[in-house]
Image (cartoon, rainbow, N blue to C red; front, top):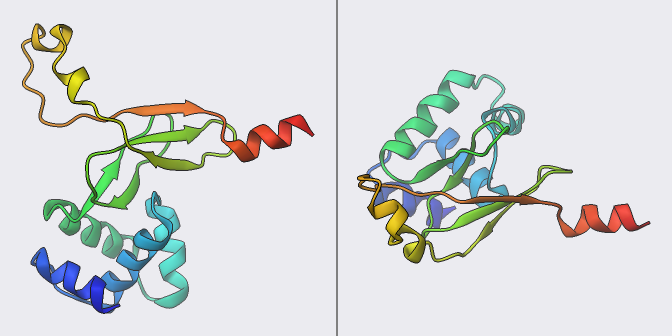
Length: 139
């Protein structure tokens, strides 16, 4: 818990019991939706509101502590900010995993440089079927 407190203070974020619990959920489970965070925290803090979770997430996003992960056909998910990475998502069960892919060569390609865009952020999502779902299909 002390490490989480230090992480919050490093980003100039006030340390509150609700914020600590929210960060611990993201650290331990990752890629959670607002609803998943709400129901998980509601058991620990019965009076917590959805507005409180939104307010805390937005403050942490503004301070580059949490990132919103936007995935096709899925509600936004949230994770603690990390080094640049991409995601794979299972089309069967919805499981989301981080993957390390160097996108620098993609961002340097002629197609992008000829587009006239100055890229500030990039995201790559690959969808498929996870190992567990593949195994279920084979049974």
